[in-house]
Length: 127
Image (cartoon, rainbow, N blue to C red; front, top):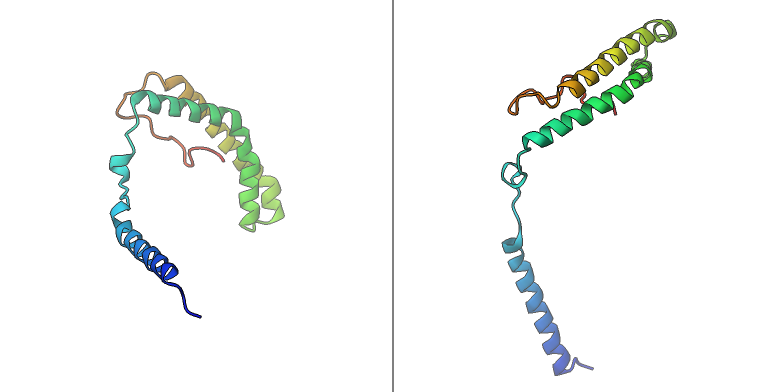
């Protein structure tokens, strides 16, 4: 029981086509350079990003308190530290984040287009 001639021709043709597709695939590969492929932000986009970051910081500034407590808990701080120092530290960070958000909301339309759009706090957003 041999393979008939027609089936053999089809098998050879499929194999040759497969080899040609595999050989041609590097030709279709696309290079990616983010400096060329992603357009730079315009001044309006930078201003709106600053506004959004400011709104986020104003609305979520209070979340620094539980985030700070959780960070200190994960660092293995003792219970006295968690109940005494961590809430004060979190509150200070919350006030700082909220006031930074107010600053960014107020100054977003007046900033220089080339500078003054970077984040004031790190991380940019609390979450």
